[in-house]
Image (cartoon, rainbow, N blue to C red):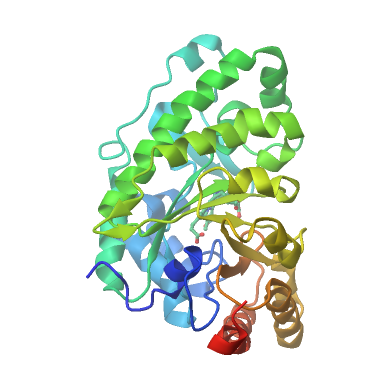
Length: 359
Ligand code: CP3
């Protein structure tokens, strides 16, 4: 059977009736868990962890062993795609991700090629298949990729950036060159996500972490247009089941209607928008995912419960909500705060999903 035993997450993404609001957390496997730090130490580095399907599978399952989460997310990184394009990904201690060969010259950009995901990214595809086997139909597995614009930020800046000076200089002085980078990257992402779907990913999320740094017009031309193109090229069903697509643009709250028209099934929200207002704007077209401020998890279990209920109450009754944080979980999160969060979301949402209170 292709359907997992707990299909609440998939049903909520498709706005079908559910018994409670499903929850998973962006970056749910990571440094806030001592068992993750232990496995990473054994692997030698974060990249070695990503490149071993066995260890990636082990780490994917760690948060599910601790918490009653409604979905697993593939353990990997968005930057494996530019790495497979030959840019040479590495992590400098305390400095985040970097590329040995960032895109600086026009000839480097003209030479970019679409990698074959089943060859250059084989280790990710093998991890997807291995995780599906290990999950044994318990909860659905989410595959993911970065958006072309977010990937291009790292490919052109060479690492993290405060002001995105290089990519924005290209955007305004050589838009043709940036469009070429985005076009090749969008083709790479489409092939990569389709390979994850074929290997067993049951939903996919596009992480557009830096789309929100663009102007109103530039967001549409340089980020949303390429995500729309990717979505149009994705396999939308596999094994007879629909594969929902989630688009998460951090800082995209002002542009919800346009994001909802991209062809996605669900829109991820950061914590700056009220989810009830977002629902009033686009809730008849797409499901919503979010949107607790990750810092709430520093406030103690009572505050966690209160703020989680605030998000649930704001969304209101009925299906179409996947509970999540508004961005990835912090490495400084006390693990027990997540227990309080998951328990509250499940318990407090059941009443809102009883048949008589359907919205
Ligand atoms: O959600 C999950 O649990 C799946 C795993 C996942 C990781 N990165 C693991 C990771 C996912 C979905 C990502 C996505 C990702 N990676 C994004 C988009 C989402 C976002 O957070 O905005 C971005 C921008 C990246 C690039 C990246 N990778 C950065 C900026 C960093 C350093 C940040 C930091 O916390 O130091 C990474 C490293 C990274 N990716 C870690 C993990 C668990 C920490 C690595 C470690 O163990 O040291």
